[in-house]
Length: 435
Image (cartoon, rainbow, N blue to C red):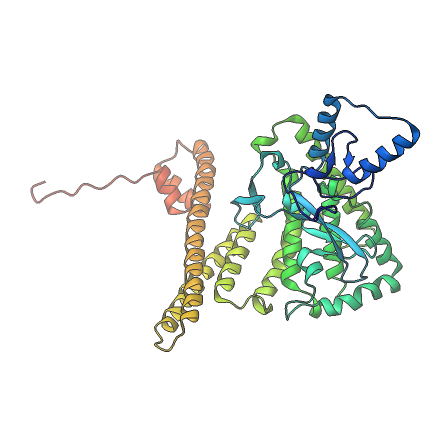
């Protein structure tokens, strides 16, 4: 991102010359008379002098044109050209500028509910849509790290994928067509939910080309989960979405995605069709990753993964499994904290190890605290729901004696806490010796 004329960079005021097409030209090399870079302006003037013509332009036109150029460049990201790790052709993708946004509110399954932006103009952008990088030449689609540092992690399956992906496209005409169709017309300047959904699906499809034993279960679990989030976001209507146009747009994009799924089912029969099915695939892969994935070794990551799984199950409405995982978070967290305490008391421990173990201890403590808070929240919500359900039954049998009502509610599976909140028992009086 250097000015091609002076090699400097003005991050707040740069433009693309409409004449020569060079980008990131700083404002000092913008010719306000010709509305191009100074080098192209010089060529204009020389040509005009040869033709005996001198161009005139008003101050208002200059100002309007410059504002238009500035507006066109006002985005929260910049484009980055990089060689595709599969075919080595240059692929252009987007990178969000550093500290341009922050995650303000996160759901129990790590879905970001609200972002904070350093500039209000960018509030309509959604970083989740730009997760995947894509090569227009071969169709390879993966996260930013897999383009920039493929195979960096010792557990990476990229070396296998690098051979398997091109071989699959050469041997399987259906696969070739599917990859081409999903990657067709990817345009980061006009990114929307259907386009992002297709990239998510393409990322999953490419990873699942590998045999089961060679798949990255952690990566696939995350990909399926994030795809489910896209569908969730289109179904949920938030306070800021009360605008009828926003609702209509969301409904249209969801319909487009459903049409995409119907098309894919012709060649991919087992493709998940809704959020719940994507979340089921996510926990299937993430549960396997929890047991076997080399990236989940650090004790803090182990405990955090348990909390993550509990959050997904709770979002799926499976409270039993969600609670089981929350209990496991607390038990495993307490066990790991005890082990860390013993290691920290070792007199031979180095300062670096003390620092590292202390960080892990703090992370585990925070995770256990979150698990307890979440358990209380879920229990309270469950209590409220049961109480409302019991109230409806109570309205129909309110004429019956309290003891009989209690028996009916017990048989229907309501907890003692719910029953007592609706039918508090009268405390028996304790009489003295003289009555």
